[in-house]
Length: 200
Image (cartoon, rainbow, N blue to C red; front, side, top):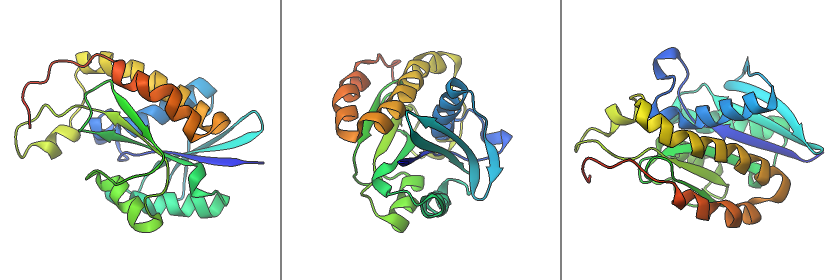
């Protein structure tokens, strides 16, 4: 059976729930809810499993905290014997407006600490889905911003992209990265974004 590992980056604990940095967690929670499966607390992360047309899908929300995300990713890739081209990492991205997203087959970490640690351990040749969270913060305010919660208006803009991300995960498993990029990346630019207060 072909196996896939879908990772949503975030930080564990109630104080981080629904924060911008936990957008990856939010996408996997939406996928699990749609698939009627629940996460279990296992080594290095919350893990859930399902299958799509004969393909095994392992969902992972690392509990290592963001800066050590690579430990969880490497462990579960090895434990499940999954090729890293069948890994998809979902992360937040301040370089994209809220509601936009970008799917890539590989690339740099873009300054994201979670992606940076994964890159240290397995390289940068793995697919990733970057979910826009905007950058409406003053100079020096990025940490407070990403660890802050979405406003209700922002959540309204974000939710359609989360719903689309669930479809992207399914397409990635069933059709592969290239077809999925071609199908969805145009839609990732089409979502309206709330006005940005300032350029940073």
